[in-house]
Image 1: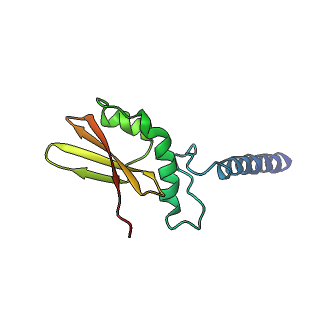
Image 2: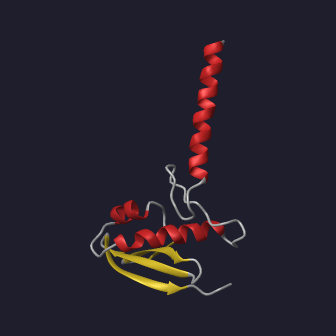
Image 3: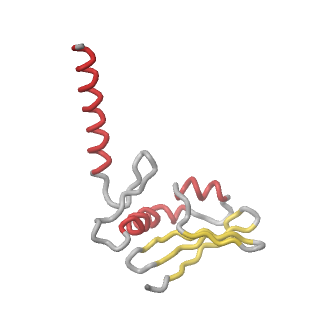
Length: 123
C-alpha cells in the first residue's frame, strides 16, 4: 500500500512538471506533442497568431528544389491553406498575423519552385 501511494505521488509530480513546462512555453513555440502555443486569448484568432509567429521563424529554411517532405519536416505542421491545380500545388503559411501575410510555397513535379507573399484581405 505504501509503495503504491509513493508511486502515485511520483507519477503526479512528474505529470505536474511536464504540464508546467509546456504551459510556460513562449507564444509561437511548438511543444513536444507538436502543438504550437497560441497568442493570448484576447486575440480574435489566438491560434493563427501563434502559428504565424512559429511559421515566421522557420520559413526562411525553405528553398527551391526541396520536396514536400522536406518542407513538412521544416514547417512541422500542415499548411493553413492549400491549393492544387493541374500542374502545381501550393501551401500557404501565415507568417505575419498583424499584417495578415500569407507565404505561399509552390511545388511543380514535387519540388519547390517559388515562394511568394500575399496580404490577405481583412474581414
